[in-house]
Length: 161
Image (tube, rainbow, N blue to C red):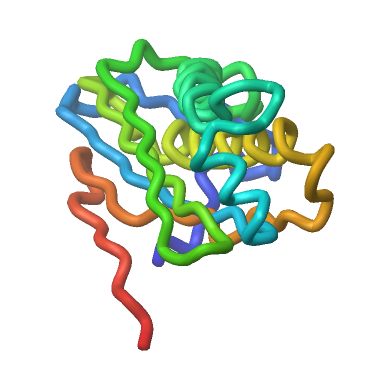
């Protein structure tokens, strides 16, 4: 693990990392998260019976839009012209939705923050659209699962027992 934080100079001042000397490579990041809720709330989402519309399609669009705007949201992130963003939803049980975002770019810097932002905003959108019926929803376990490309190489989260 590096012992220096790259977003601070030697005097502790904030700085945007200079990526001008990095090689342009294909970069991919995959992040995930989960939103837990009452079983009835999940049934309403799956059956598309909420008055606000198709919750998952709105959340998918929100996640994609958020990934594209990450450089505007996170102060020291580089704005990137993303090549692809995809958001997938799975139902591991009757009370939660798994959210996964995959982001691709050909650039000098990676897209981990874009993938994490996409998952976060997709989860927040689900919460927003369902809060009238369930205010006890919990958004949790937002994390980087995998990244490839660039100098640091490939990262794959190890599954914990």
